[in-house]
Length: 239
Image (cartoon, rainbow, N blue to C red; front, top):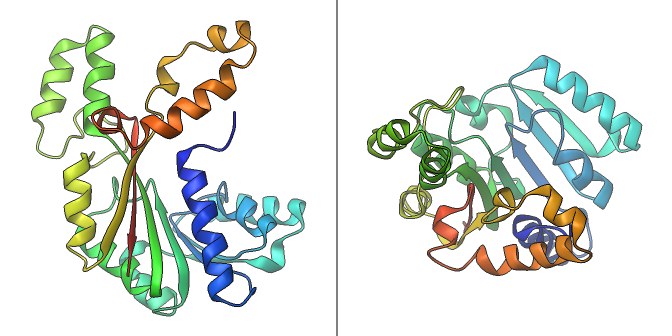
């Protein structure tokens, strides 16, 4: 499949950041970046990436991946939690801050978003990717878990039955969270709006189906109400 809607937005933002810096490497801060699933490809692309991650095992894997890709000199790994972000990285130093899969598990999302915003340069962009409450409700309903679907829908944080998750989000809640940190919310879109629903056999049996699905995802990602039932919600906000 072609790059999804999230990656397309990030590519555009990173190109703009490079232009603002006169061709110099965009500075990316990946908070909760784990083993480098995002950081290593971004470093290969030419970004200078700082990864903040609490797990030493994940950081060890990050170092290995970076070495294998030949980009160790472009990645800085910092062990620590987002709670101490202001002490771990220089404020106002990142062109793009990534928080993908982070806000669902932190103790205080508002405080975390404020810290993420503080790490941005003026005009820099924060990209967050979060689990969607309504997608989880629908997934349980269509699989026959109707009681779980109802309880998840009415649960205070939308995290009922979610191993490892403290909360899930919806579109308006994500917008309010980002705006509450003084950021200008430029985009809330979906990721995996229909892709998780299409059987692999359909893609394998139909030439061109994967490309068609990718193009459908790009349009559906920004089309309510389809966007609002995507597996994940992607928000972009600017300082």
